[in-house]
Length: 357
Image (cartoon, rainbow, N blue to C red; front, side):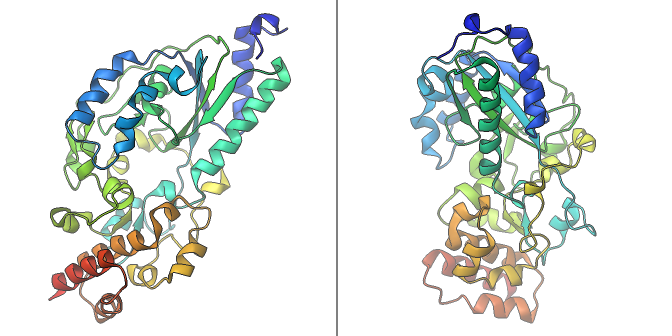
């Protein structure tokens, strides 16, 4: 591994170069944090102890790695945090909130309409690291993007990229919250940035809009109530008390971002990989429910949606169809899956049909 003391470039100059390289690789901003996350450890432990993580047992199992980056990557000294915007215009005739109110259409969270961000960002993070190597020679590093026990929001705050909003997402004064984060854990002793201060003030729009009251207090989210958790992370039956509240949201939920005043500053992404795919954007629930398993595999290839699998895809859409206006077409669609091989699908189809009679 290389030491900056052996390099011909100083740390401040390298930091400036990293910002240039990051921009060349498609990132919109970059900051650098140290590895001390001890202050947030009590809050995270309390969140887990209250059961707010739901079925996401992996968070507690790898808690030590989240709190101490050196337990994830030995020898790490600094964490380079990078931001990439993904905001895009949806169907040109409708805004995001209009989509949510169009109960015959399937609402997919904006981040999932294009190519899987894990694939996009990981490759670009590696490209940033390779370009850094070309300047200073070999050094120790690992890249991550929402794929390991990494406290992304906290690192974003400490890197100066934004503050934790009351909805618990990272917010930035210039672009709002429509962005992904990626990290480069490195053994380079780089200068760190100053943490960002909080700018939510008295605004509670995200708390007030949440359909399931999942934001139980400012900066505290009960994942068990969150529609994103229920439609993506949760593997079993969706609790009946939340099914009507889910509306037409079949993969994720953007309500808290759609009403956030800071998102009026969002700029459309230049990354074409994030553009909405035609099979997903603005399609009716009936057409999406008609997909065969082979079609699901084809239309979600390279998409984050594929991770939930065909069974949960049908579960989610069945729930949304139960909330849609009663039409012969919707009844026929539901009845076509009454005898589906999956008990999970059959349960939600039966519930949806009951909602129409």
